[in-house]
Amino acid sequence: MSHMPVVIGVDGCARGWVFIRLEDGAFASAALHERFAEGVAAAADATVIGVDMPIGYPSSPVLPRAADVAARIMLKGRASSVFPVPPRDVLTAPDWATANERSRAMTGRGLPRQSYALAAKIIEVERVAAQDERVHEVHPEVSFRALAGRPLASKRQWNGHTERRALLEATGICIPDTLGEVGTVAADDILDAAVAAWSAGRIAAGEAVSLPSPPERDAGGRPIAIWY
Image (cartoon, rainbow, N blue to C red; front, side, top):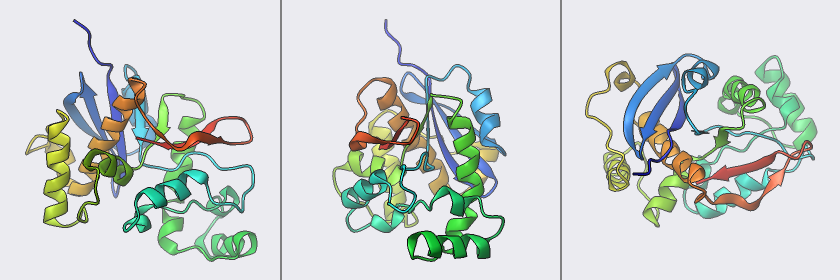
């Protein structure tokens, strides 16, 4: 009897990172980690780890990532859910004011404070991904759109929440009604981590699609893509 590999889906939250583990394609456990690296280290037996965080930058720092452009096209009507990744020199600025100034100089656009607030998490994932080829970028709204084959209601609405949970259950990913400490974080973070795990399973099975296809490459040749 064949078994599907262990895969992990991850989403950032206010208290760190939500990790959802699938075994044989079904929900196995959920965990909350303060640091992304800690959760990855605890998942040593996982074949693929899908995380909702941008990984990689094109060789030209002023051009948008092809992955983000493709995702916005796919999510027409909800394209604002795709985070426009600033150049790395912007993300590594010591404060928002400096980051905003660098962004205007490099791209002609300012940087919203909420975008800069994600910088630490992006860099945190980048450091791990550079050393661990199991880590892949996913985007929950892209994954849910692929699952549904149609636009969905906002995940912050009751209708959107129940739609997404039903889609996950149809794939065999049944999230328990109670999740202990993990169940105290925002519900949409849990749903996003779960569908990230679904995408990780597709990557492990060789069934995943990349945005763009084929992937863009960074200066070192590593693929830059959103997988689902």
